Length: 486
Length: 139
Image: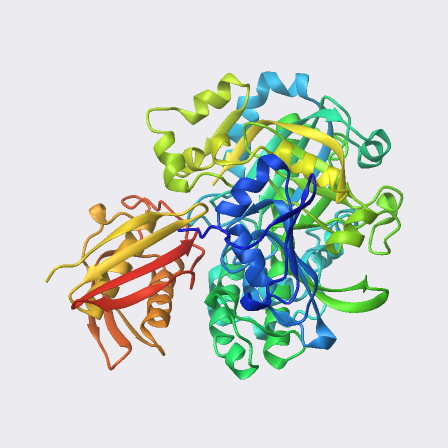
């Protein structure tokens, strides 16, 4: 159903492609797609490029409508899209620029465990994580939160958990935005959204969300790896999930609430899924507030999951998390809109930066970074697929100059779920992965088939592209050992 | 009465198409398609009836709003659906009944978590006296 891009495309260099501003299509700025020669074809034919051009029509957009190399078709904005709108110049905020899974993101723990010591008990460990981590369709978590507690989580995120003994300051220090966005008013969240999220804080969910046991396979930047505690052969644990039903419902609620807003503000839209309102308007501020509530919920969700991982590992190895050297490296959001100040054409401007399937990548010395990463830049966590690799990168000045401090977020799908299921017919994906030494377990009947490695682009090509473009710098490659999916 | 539904391919997610002799039939087909993705109806018994009333400004918005309401019942309230009855209520409204039973993990298998019903390429049109509908679901 995707529409092929039929406008002009100019190659600027080996990894940058320009979709020139076309006033006849209402484009206010150029589109820029970051892609290697190997990735650009899919970007242009798969519908993503059309969406880059559509986003370029939105009021207040500055610089360019951007897409990272993991671009693929999304609802309204493409996945891998970055768009910054000038709040003081009528710039809009759009729920379609964040997506349904608000603050879907990634958290990574390092450990002193050696892969060679873990491997003999790997199956047992994955089985235990599979039992302990709530995952799958309709599965609630072990944490029961009442209405007042949920409101507290939405308002204060991981900080709420820390205040109630469920998170350490050390984790908050290495979580994007400290695991809490200001100006998150729970009154902007509907009762239905609270109801949908009530038993889901501390659950993985399904789809492409996972928990993974990994081994540090190669280090590319020794000082940065050392600052993060990453050493070849050591085991890491990655969690990928978001704001669950609460975030999905908030997006749905505000798409409906904003349905009439474009007409009220005289905004012409090429796609109904791009509904939006000026970020400074009442409607825009209400959406931003509710979106922040979902973002805070998502950080609390990943915090609770990481708590469960720590408990499981402590029991499994008979040693405390401290003795196992379990320490959080970082937590990043990759579906979010934030008000940030950036320099544009020599002027500091307050921008509403939409990152949808894109990761913040702030450079060394940025004031928002914790002291431990001040010298190396913000860690960027890029999950790949369950058969190949995931990457740890760091943010760069190049990202600040080109992409409002943003980079890619993952591999990006190439096969539809139905096509992936069809291609897995007659095969055992778990056995194929086991032959590579990877133990994978999923609750859903089709989970492993839908998420098989062939369903995704090669994350290595995506990472190589952002590195060549100067958007972030590779630090280490992590290979999957064990995977738990919903 | 002829009505039906089928799933359609999409890179990241999944789409639904439905058809029927009336707007209400077509919408009921979309609703059955959505409910079937979450929980196949083969082990669901028609024991209870849940009523829904939805009004919208146009047929496309009605499709999104109606299916979002169905999704709420199915996914949030854990009501699994055997079949859907619907009748038109005014120029752009529906009165529908979901016939099924509360989710029972010992008998029902939940197959898919659906995040939302989207506006992407949503379609609800009458062509040659036959209603056709299409929605994409974020999963």
